[in-house]
Length: 469
Ligand code: PLP
Image 1 (spheres, rainbow, N blue to C red):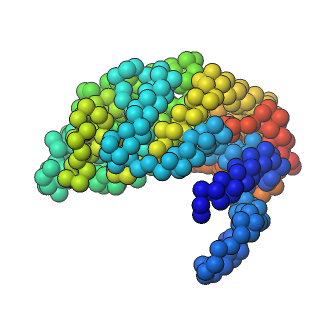
Image 2: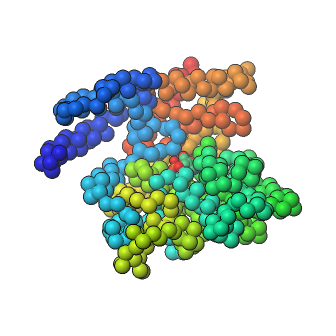
């Protein structure tokens, strides 16, 4: 493809995306595709000759778009928001167009320095002190893995330079809340701690980790010769946006010499609002934090921000310096390949830059306040409607609800809950996620798609009521 052919096709693609976004509301939210249906629409062998752009758009419209659940839809209330702002998409286009690969500072000085600037902008936006330095990772899963590897190396006195965890000795333990995200357990397993050394700590009535239970577990472990290594506290848990008490947990981490990592993947974005910051009080005492601008801040996936207080430790754990990556200009600059796992790094900072530059922080704050307001409104009407219950506190934008018809309990109630959630999703009107809280199924309604207005929440509430009727 020549640049002129690209210009023509590219304009059509941009027009297509703008039309797609403008008409999202009229489309079903959830993909209703049968398994194998998408694959069957494609030729089984690759075309030998160039095919037309028109044929490509025809497949896009007929097969691909209906084969996607639309996170950007104004009535998408599933999982957590990852809708992505159009302003951020422009930066993603630019990143792809420039095609930079951040192997070293020299290979794209702008890639490194725009990342330094924009991660620092986000730090300021969420009210963290200048003690923090940031790096963009693909996902929170990767950032948490890096955090636990850093914790392991601090506790083990850099075992990776010798026998790693294979030398025996005192087992290192990771503590998480029983409400922590599955990526935390996965990170602990991949980092080599072993399932037996991941302790799930119980929660209180608001689903927050109980510090006294954490303290007890750490003491029990020490008494049996194990070593507390890391605690992962969650700010905004996935099931019901619970906030672990970071300050109390930080005190225990200091006492027991453990690393404190804060998983604020979703709720970190809320900290652009000063009124939300008490929810993560004590966060300055953590060793590392992850927050995903690709969730609620509006950045296009993938863009996860990993923040550390001690970049030297991070670099010491992650650096490799083979001859082919050494360059003369490498002193006094940041070498981001040593801040994480990947060597080749995309120019992700561009999508953060275009988001913040073109939208401005004020409008991001207004959007997040709007979502908090929608959640409060929905929680209010659900709580006031006979037969319905809000089953968890609503500190942010996720409302956990259950429809509890008289006489329905246990597994029958679970079956009812899952059935009405499936009916809403299958209708195409809205998308919700069912999840288990206290051993019972309930349904999460998570605000945060870019263009959700009150009427979309009202339409969804009507669809929920229809589904149980
Ligand atoms: N942590 C929390 C609290 C989450 O809610 C999620 C995903 O929703 C993750 C971590 C994992 O995020 P990622 O998909 O970026 O790995």
